[in-house]
View 1 (cartoon, rainbow, N blue to C red):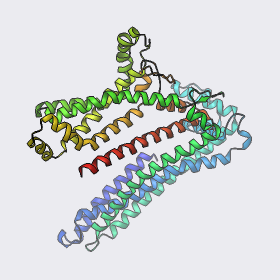
View 2 (view 1 turned 90 degrees about the horizontal axis):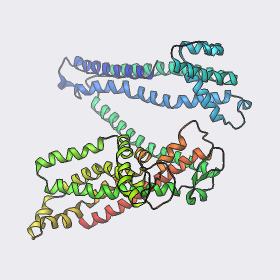
View 3 (view 1 turned 45 degrees about the horizontal axis):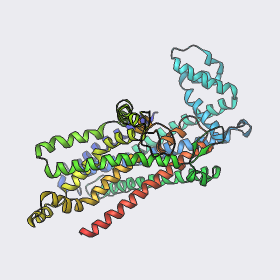
View 4 (view 1 turned 60 degrees about the vertical axis):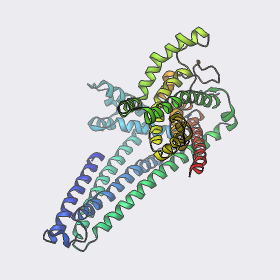
Length: 484
């Protein structure tokens, strides 16, 4: 049974349990809710939570654990001599998964018994091409056919047992919660405890996800540095990856491009966004503000690919024809300046909206006191309002900086893919995020340094962003101590 159907059935059981639990509680007291320990709604929620929460937890854990268990069993099923020269077991397992995912349905059963059936004519040409590709792998290595067959059987068996266990658990616990529903049952206490556990679980998931991301980056980066010298990675000035060998994987050109483009973006976005926030919060009339703020926030809803196309088609040629070519600084529309300016436009709402909210949250008493002492409106803004709002403004700038460092599409279309160190803003460069995507695109060997370097780049980006957070926290605490 598909996972979607299991999920819908579990939710249906929970809804039915809510109705039946509430009805049973009222029936036992002849409709007089005052005789119940808790409100009737809590009795319904008690049955619904017992039916849904454990079943969904089992479903989640099962879906996470089943692929790993099946892959381990398939890995033991494949003999050592099946791995070709220059191929790893991981690559062979990927091939088995692709064959198993391609061979499904009625056609799959025919193909599993008769590989020559792949030559049959089909109306779906794309599916036929996929089956032919799978058939070539099957015919080249018969062990792949056996492993794919075992993979499909294990997956099918696991899906059946998943359906049985999940639905039986949902029904059983719903019946248990329904049967113990009574006037003296403390349903409210149980529901609140379950909701507290759910909230704690959600917080734990968020924390563990962060820990998992960091650990995965660290472990894969360690594997990379076992294959490639860390001195050449951190201090190398050449980036020329080659899966055939002889790669130069120095990160300094990528780091320079990332910081250069982000600096230009922030140099444009922070003043414009901050001044727009000051105008909207301190000078604009309510009518102008009601129009200007939503108009600026529209920029945050534009997809980054649209910004990239805007940089490629409009801003790049404009800067090339009006500035870089006349001044002899470059002949390409793809440049650091192009990506930086367009990225700056994208970051304006991040700075302006957050800064506007922070400035509006400054107590009016500070403004009144400054004006009462004889300060002008502009002096009050500059010497009272902005310093009081500075911690929040720093947070807005930090958010914009993190957004700029992690941007990819605008850089790909606006700045090009040239990994170099140059001070000319009208030359093409690239960033860390672009190269992470490039190194992980395609069917690459995860045992090669050319692929594992993506994790080292990701770890570097994480440390860079963490450093920005620590620096911003230092500034925030410093100014908070001054005004508290």
